[in-house]
Amino acid sequence: MRLGIHIPLKGGFASNLMRVKEQGCQTIQLFAGNPTAWRMAPPNREEIEKRAGLAQEQSIYPVVIHSAYLINLATRSEEFLEKSIYLLNETMQRAALYRAPYVVLHVGNHGGAGVERGLDQVVEAIDGSLAQWPRGVKLLLENTAGSGTALGSSFEELARVIGSFPPRTIGICLDTAHGWAAGYDFSTADGVKELLDRFERLIGLDNLCVIHLNDAKVARGSRVDRHEHIGHGQIGLDGFRELLRQPWPDGMPAILETPEIGSDWDRKNLETLQSLLE
Ligand SMILES: [Zn+2]
Ligand SMILES: [Zn+2]
Image 1 (cartoon, rainbow, N blue to C red):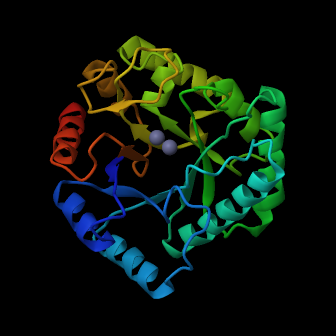
Image 2: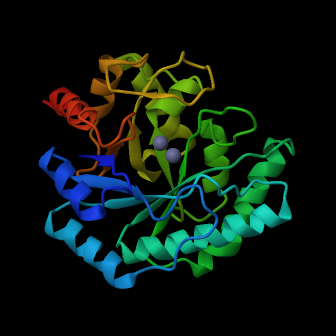
């Protein structure tokens, strides 16, 4: 398992990378563009290749790209669906420039159309786009807290989407705070064992490609997405210890998305994780 953190866009890629490297990061996640904008600025290839080279030189890998929050493959609006597909495709291309093997995507919000219809539309949208995606970049569906009409808060819903494709076409990113908010018990060793067994049965742990490590401010099952520093929230250290000590593949990235990214908290959260691994 490789520990890392989501790095902000502001402050510059190189200085953020060197800062987290010094804090002990082995992997990073970042947005490929403004996460709240429909259009990405055209890629500055030279700059992105430089960034990819720097990450490689500093042994920071893999680089994980988080897609923009605006993308909603389950939207009821034709216009937003078209924009979502376009932006997702752009993000996949951008990930290839970063030599990033993974793009993380929230499954989507059905907006009242219903879970079944929403999931069908997500499958259809992915199916129609797959052929254009660069080789070596895999789409990962991230589990959600399940607020409102958000899809993908249960392992069953994630399984429905990824099970619609040939094995290993797409994968999963498991976020602990989202899973907790959706009702999964990440707080105890037994809880973690049970939910991983469930994941294995429904999805298969070999489809789990990235873990997002976040404590949660809110109660289990609250369906509210509020991240907290590791050990300072409702999940607590016992659950994270159990999760981290599973026999994960060596290269599996586990990435922090804790509050106040870029502050001294980054180092504290990383140190907490490292102490749990010892
Ligand atoms: Zn996310
Ligand atoms: Zn996350």
